[in-house]
Image 1 (cartoon, rainbow, N blue to C red):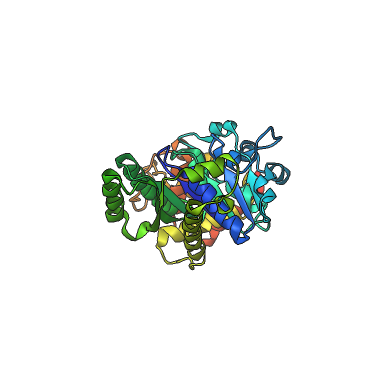
Image 2 (image 1 turned 90 degrees about the vertical axis):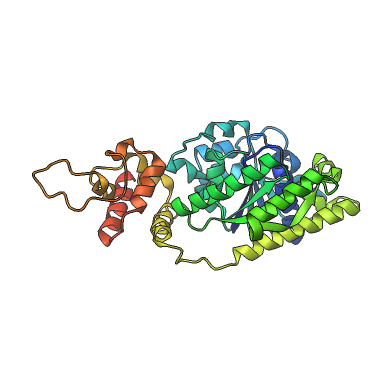
Length: 359
């Protein structure tokens, strides 16, 4: 199972439109597809025909990603009524907004990853529609993802937002999830007759170069009509729908090809250290994993706390500039500090013992 997030750090660029277009391409291709509606506006759920009251939603999954909750939050899309195939949606909810905090804990951002591990044999592709922000929900989606497609429209504010998104993805890749990569930037809502759009499209080309998708999506009423009818664009009549379907097919093909690229395990010492931690965290239920927000005094992180007892040798001064007390560090800072250490077998033993203790 591969996971693709569709994101933008600016609202109103048609992010959900692109997510549904890719879902339509995957559906037409015969891939077992799940769309996770992580945007509290829930537009992806609506576009997939998942309308009504549901017992569990993505908000419940983020609260408690148990097996039964995850399965009850997923329903079949009505797209299956117009074309045979397998496409489901993890129902969105306005209540997911409570998890969109600016400073999420490490434990929180791993919740969706844990939830998807429950169903990894059921799907070939997971597409996550994220909120237009860099807060907790978007970072939760990225932690669970292999690739992120950034959606931009040809405007100055979207260009700036796309650049911020690319840098944020790279920071998260280095700091927490080494397998994460940006698939690229795709231009949406392009009007070729607009000089401003043409100028901004060239600006995006100059800025992102090979990271800009070779296709662009023109602004068409057709796709809004298909979404309003809760129909995949690949089944909508007309030449414009055929053109759009081909574009989404190309983007999906690029994503599938990217998934097959071997992971470069020699991307640096930081990636290797974080990979060890990530594997430990992804391989276990998060409830049984070390609570990074309350590290014990005998943890490896304590080695970073300066020794204030001048009667004893203090050893070499660490070059890492950190707060004196791990309890005063944020969850992200704690994990980064832990990753800065060279793990020896003893450290691995400590992690295992803590997992047993927490259990």
